[in-house]
Amino acid sequence: MPPSGLRLDLHNHTSFSADGLMPPAVLLATAKAKGIHCLAVTDHNTVKGALEAVALAEADLELPRVIPGIELTTAVGEIIGLYVWEDIPRGLSLFESVDRIRGQGGVVYLPHPYAFFRRGAISRGARLQAAELSDIIEVVNGRSLGPHAAKRSRALARKTGRPGGAGSDAHREAEVGTAWVTVEAYPARDILVQLVAEGVIEHDLGVRQYVMNLGMQNLAPVTRLRRRVSGELSRR
View 1 (cartoon, rainbow, N blue to C red):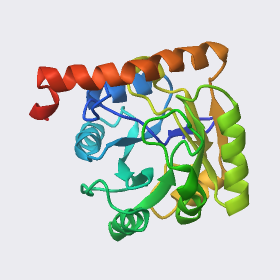
View 2: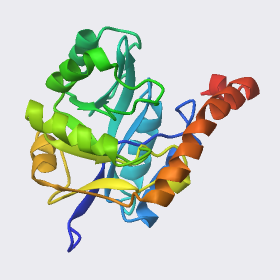
View 3: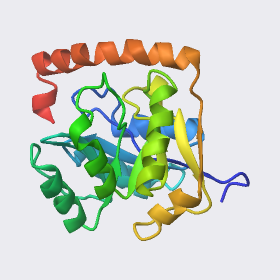
């Protein structure tokens, strides 16, 4: 255990996401360099990147520990399943998606609930319901465009009695390690929620990062299109 606690980052992407640019090995090496001790790999609608990252971490104990997960597109927007080992179909109802996550013994994590300009964010009409169905609500997202969303997310977590989490939502190296929860032990499925509830949310977000995030989000559609045209995604 590091003297100052363990940095847990609950939301990250690899090149297995259409808008991700890091192979799992690069994500893990970058996270290690930035002082992250454990991270969730939560690619869009696939666990392939997470499973590769788990294998890499198990083969090299110097790398951060990995929680396998998936950022799942439901009929009303995105939710994350942590400790998910198998793919779940996209486009299911919110209830069915949550049931599929829990059916694998997973933890339901609501990402960026107030990211109004984010492709795939949970819809306004389903936000409260999604929060009530979740185990953890992301109150700090490393790709946010300003502090207002975090304030509203914290209020939602308080209203529903859910612990607040944090994740970098990194899609490229510059975004790794921008938001995390400092906890007192390496997480496991059965203690994750408690650890997060007792942890301290921290981040490196400021005006410069918010401006950079705007540019990165504007580049995301270009990244998806370029990777599809090149055939890179079809080879995954």
